[in-house]
Length: 570
Image (tube, rainbow, N blue to C red; front, side, top):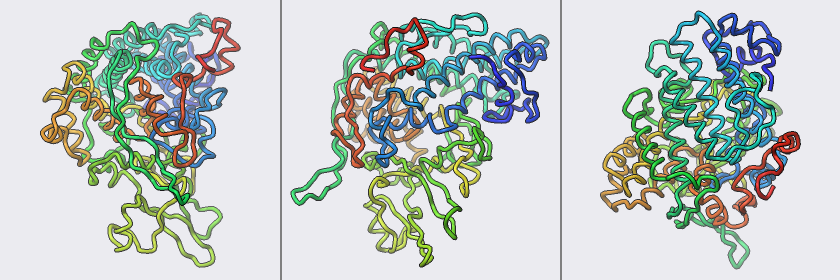
């Protein structure tokens, strides 16, 4: 994984560094030492960040992290591979693996190079080193969660590390992630520092990721426990052959300890998670947005709730933009019709996801779900037909209330589900498919829920502080507070655990978190199979043991003599 022309990519693409310009010289594979000699540490940081864009260039990232979970669906043609559990030799999963390997190698090598830079301001140089350490730890964490044991590159190939390493155990990988993040938090400047550059990670980001790492270990290593998830079959076939949609039902699952986490002490890591999350909550580097609408507005890109985001530009070419808004929200298509028509927006949260909300005024489904959008246009009659969702809004459609018209049609088939407004945050939605959407890798809202989750496990039930913290998030979302719920029906350790997992599914819908949540709690197979063989769009949801880990790419297994087999079942 050589440093090849990275600056031509990094300076004009996914991270808009203040010290990078669009006319940077194109460097060869020997450029690293030249850049270090020139003292351009910020360009070396940008080169490591730039690989993030490769995950989104052709839509690989969203397929790898979103399509295989209980609450997402769409047309059958889109779910034939990952969405149906067909992981082996998949191009999106291969891109996922090799891009993270590249990020790790660049972060290692550029850390080495930045250390060689002479004469740079010490504070800014340390911060650059911290960013590179964070990127490495984050990429390793992303990989170990889904692949299990992986080759662990503690330093780069360019520094002489062997190209082909054996796989390190899950424990070894996590130990290196933790020590790397601990180093990062000592090097990075806080977000409220005068020299902090917007769009970059900061000290609080490293601490937030460390809290998440600890909580992941805590949940995965827990030997037993119960979690209730709302799910089950989506449809019932009646005697007359007609199908009726079913509401999700609460189903209690017994968790399994996740393979590879047996040597960890769950309580110990939850104590660490609680303490580190509390640091982030009290130090004031981040703030919750006032509302979901404010959070996802274009004006709020890189706002104070976003801890780590993909950086994009409002242009349509290559990795400057990405397909995420097109896939999940849609866009105005100016081709083929005499007026713009709404296109794409194929992927939805299943109706079961919408129905888990017991607060109908929760902003995550009032503003957060698209309730009315253009369905089709007739060129001859010049009439646009509008769709509405969900079915329970039919009373407003009939009366022409809440922005509906009586002529609106209920969306049907594979598109019956929740389109999410969070994916509308772009400068331009007309005439193009690649848009400048900043993918939120990490959000401050998660730190609230990690604290509450860890507090519950440490104290065998939620403390008053945990209820208070979650209630802050509830109030932002205009939903019933955890405090009020506890007064109505006191939480137990089990019921609060289930509540936090459900809140995570509501808050982070289609943000790539749900599948890993089910995996780390050891209930992935149970929850998926409770759906039945198919979801409402005939996508296969049945899973087996082999699906607990993604297969390594065929090229990795074939090329590395130290890997003699793929993950179990592949």
